[in-house]
Image (cartoon, rainbow, N blue to C red; front, side):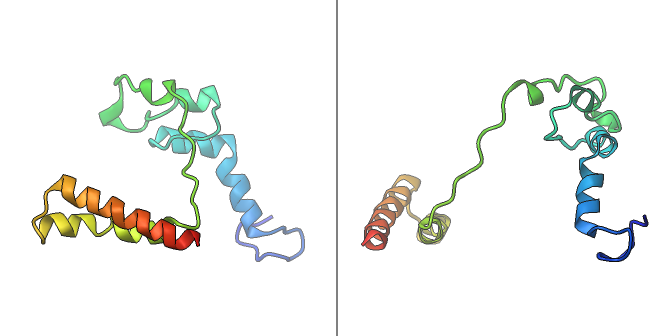
Length: 121
């Protein structure tokens, strides 16, 4: 089967399935790991090969990268967009309006709490 074969043609399957299969294969994971990409596979051989193709990182103690479990992904809520718009204004308040950091954070928290109360109604 050709990797360039359009989806749905004889002997095919979809290109997406082929790409997923290729990117999750052990060989692909080894190549990515050797070039400094952390693999989600958890395969000990893939982890041992980490950074081997990067001369600047050879012989460095990078074991701490793999010693700790990954943190959970952020869980987004329906309120995030509205609250983030309030938080994104903090740097401007500090830089342009010359507010001190604590005041800008406190005022942003107050605006965020008011916005949450409005959205909860």
